[in-house]
Image 1 (spheres, rainbow, N blue to C red):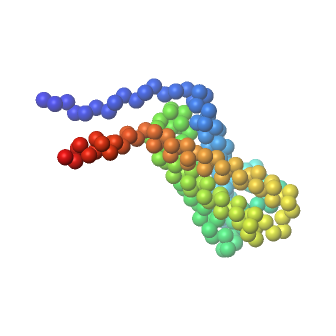
Image 2 (image 1 turned 30 degrees about the horizontal axis):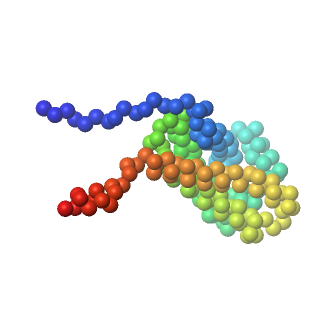
Length: 194
């Protein structure tokens, strides 16, 4: 009687702090998780979601909007139909990205390679959607009426949230490629075809 195939044992996880990029990703996901829950999620289903938050958290959103004059979040707060595209991005952040932050934190801490494809998807979505905001702010009409200092302040908020997901996407893609078996050489493929 033959035994069913067994999965090869997974290598012992490496400590998180020995993996610098993974440590950076865990810190990034933790910061982004807090910002998404405390700021962006409040505006995901205006006028319904703000009532779900305690007054101090609503005050933090008000402070952010007043201090940074973020044209995208201000448009959501006033329910501007011209920013439906951004509303869709914020809803996708709450529905898709928030769970991925949690999964990413847990899986990276465990050194679990199965999370790599999900992180490639996250990195692609986050980098491209944040790039839209940056381009609209710098080259479009969304920066009009803002001082150079205010634009710089917004870019300091947005650019890291574009660069880090792009780095994550490339890094995880390369890790996946390294995990895949090497393709057969043309000579061995030629022998196999005979």
